[in-house]
Length: 161
Image (cartoon, rainbow, N blue to C red; front, side, top):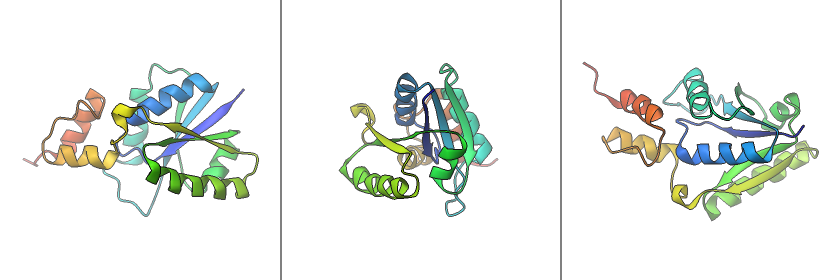
């Protein structure tokens, strides 16, 4: 059984993330979306909220699981018996950073490969940060986020009453 980890902060999960999750689910028997607990970042959504958002968008993909993790990604991959880390690439700038990470992971865990999936062109510009910025200014989110996720994001930026 082939198992892959698709890691990220997913704050929030975008349609671009979903595209990578769905495509990975067709390649691997089991895909674990790893939600990173990163104390260096101040996420808009809690770990539990991010896990639940991904479970919502991936609800029709039976071989996809969602788990939070902290520490080294390769250690999480080992714990989950994953042989592959999946990373999405939007642009050349992503590749430079992701290549460095893949090489470092390969030194630490030579038994774990990294697979780069290029993003669907319609999401090549999209990031969670950009979606949050659009939401902050009341913009339309339907091109970036699942409708339920868009509602959750808008609620975070709604003025308090």
